[in-house]
Length: 382
Image (cartoon, rainbow, N blue to C red; front, top):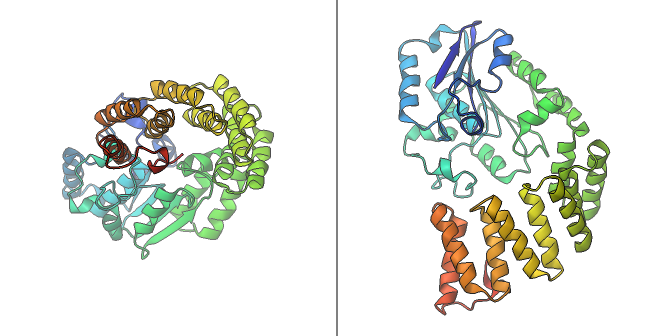
């Protein structure tokens, strides 16, 4: 779906992220950022999808190529492609239709073709799309742009690997540590999203200037949350927790980090207490349930840990990490048939999940005596 809003001589083609068709199925919805861009005096072409298809629909490509053929893009002095995550992918890949254009993308994917990026299995719905088109790989498509600016968190492994796939000739990769997969949201939270956009458009955005603009994120609780989760040393985690709680005390997210700090320090009882407090505030927060079952498992309370895992699975059916944890606990409790049934049901619901497929293979092999049914032999991350 395309919405065009005429304005100034610069055209911004803005792509929505994967939340659009999920949170607001209404086809008349606004694409995030489109209103701001119109107020800035730009012409805006907003690109929306009916489903999370990573803009792979043939009809969309036909419509965009028709606009090229009709001279639509040539009527503007400057064309900018813009988006975040799935929208960042759209911005990168469709820039190939307008050589010499500009691209600003936040935490984008370059492709979800598992033959090219077997390490990114975060979006099975997107990976199931048709990626056979040569232009489906943004690492190739974006080479035609005059300038590509990408903002990402280098501590998000998959995001960093996608950025590494992009060519360096026209790329300015701006690191925003400890923002997670939402760099635009963090910049907006510290009031720097608009200054970044304006500097980008003016051609003055560089790594040093961006770093100065991004310093304000240190006043955000989300920064200290991501920092604390990424930190390896317990003392650093504890320091991040103190900064987090100074900004947002007694929130579910603060209690999540408190549970992580306690686990890192080997205090499973304190981790359990923090996780239970957090779940009382926000029962559906899956990472809290995972910390609770880890705390119970560390204390040898496997029955209780399994109950937590199964209750969390009831809220989030098929969630890979929970399925793996529940299967591990079933095995530890001497219930291989229950582990097998759980894994097979999860795989039937999500046949594209390779981790679940691996789990079923391992359980089947153990069941047929080809491998000893030992918990230690099951390659399942905790």
